[in-house]
Image 1: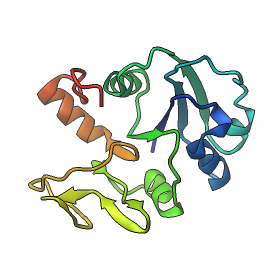
Image 2 (image 1 turned 60 degrees about the horizontal axis):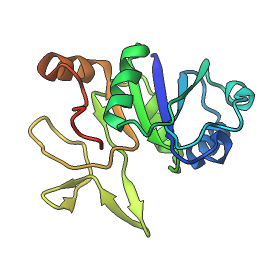
Image 3 (image 1 turned 90 degrees about the vertical axis):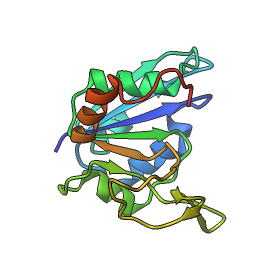
Amino acid sequence: MKVSILVVLYSCEIYRSKTIQTLISSGVEGGRLVVWNNGPRVLKEWDVTALKSSGFDDVVVIETIDNIALSKIYNDFMVRWSADRYVFLDHDSTLNTGYLEEIFCDAPINIGVPLIEVLGEVRSPTIKGGFREGPYFDRDQFVAIGSGLILGAKAVRLLEDRFTKVFDERFYL
């Protein structure tokens, strides 16, 4: 299972990112990690030794300090690195063990969305304005926070076949 994880930084150094800290301490085994600095300043520190030694097969740092639309970053990420599963993360997420296990599990995942808690209450995803725990089905129309989204290669292909690009670049996200 080839997993590619994207962490988009904004106004944050690599090792100050809550998401990066969680990934390092999690004992992740395998996968590619792409750290994308989206600005507004260049990174002061580029050393990714701790990330490489934490268990990732490959670590890549990209720097575009123009605050590019997330939709463009996400699409570019999927074009550059072929994977069975893509994971999209912001720099300020705390990832729990269950979520990390799902990322690297062998079970097929077409689309996965994390449960987002705010002050101990699950706020995302929602269906018709209220939270409902999955699994979700093809006919379900739900709204979820983008950070933590997991897309399987099959879902990516289906979306590209229908819309050319997975994320609509007319939107900044």
